[in-house]
Image (cartoon, rainbow, N blue to C red; front, side, top):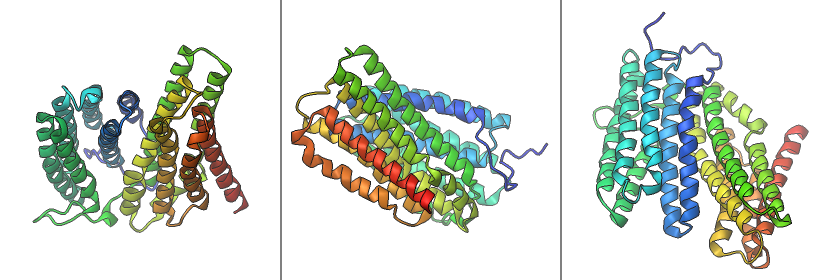
Length: 383
């Protein structure tokens, strides 16, 4: 057996291993923590904090998915590295509710340690691959730069912590777009990134499944504790159907086609960076916000729709739709008319807010999701 820790690129689909699925369990907890945090702090500040935590959690997860696209999780050292990352991820997830409070330093240390362990391991795993090794040398330098802001923010409080962590997230997210350019080391060449499209598509799809599952858990738990009036039953049905519609939209025929496009592309790294690194964060955020909206509509299905509740009920599906629109554009380089219309229709629902109840507004957003899913399905069959 070769002593290489990297996957063998033989043209076949690199299947997702059980250890990768096991690793994802930590992030089920993280997504739940973010949803609950937003639900209990439904303010502009609470929304900003939830968005920042979602961005950090997604970034930690997607970087690990890139690593397992290169490293072979069937090799024992790779598995051990994933177990270490799981432990750090658990610390990060448990500190999320108090990340802007007493556990800020715990969160920052866990996030930075995850980055250092992951990139440091890849420097070892790719020691015989000059291109990949040089790439992770650049990456770890950028992560050290952002790490300064993460740790400084953890040691700070209030608005200063928020500002420092926003700076850290800016560095994290701008680095791939800057091709990890480092003086003396040059910049990365995405055309040289040996991305296995099927594996990347499957990994991101599994994270979306995690978020959709978390949405169903919230719906089920809230419904179980509620008094089963006709309005509450209707709200539970609407939430369930809305989750199905989001699944339908994401896991359409385009999802399978995207992996083929990446596999056959001259520059698969660029497509994977655009379509599976940046765009899905909006999809994930949309599902998380929608889950909060589902719980609110279940608890208070009737009555006046407060502005914060309306923002969640409309904003969740809208974020999901915009993310799906941009992801499809990034991969196929053409606009999806059904998703464009869906975005416009969801935004237009704001004008209906003064005249509807939370249940009716949730039903209207779900109707838009179903319409888009059906339109795309019919269009694909007709084509």
